[in-house]
Amino acid sequence: MSDQLKIVLEDVKEKFDPVIEAFNVVKERLDRHEQAEEERFQGVEERLDRQEGRLQRIEDRLTVLEKDFSNHRENTELPPVKKKEKDLLNRTSS
Image (cartoon, rainbow, N blue to C red; front, side, top):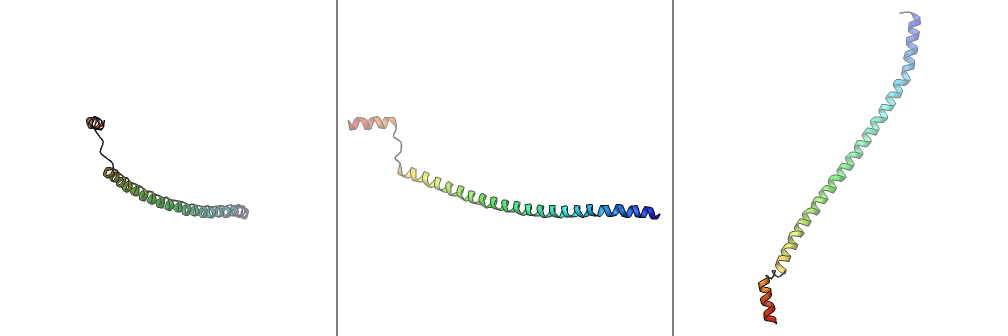
């Protein structure tokens, strides 16, 4: 290989070094950013999971309360009066 070609190749290599270094810096920054976003996303998922658990417990409590309320209503309300019985009650009270 000629000396002139060696000089040209060395010059080209030197010009690529800063580009390669800049690429590596950008890649490292992107990797850090990606890791930070992944951690943030996991935190959001964990909070959502906790909220879903809380909502499920609330729904379960509401179901129990609904049943209790229904049972209470059945035990405390008078049964509906049929029309014939109502007419009889009205006649006897007059």
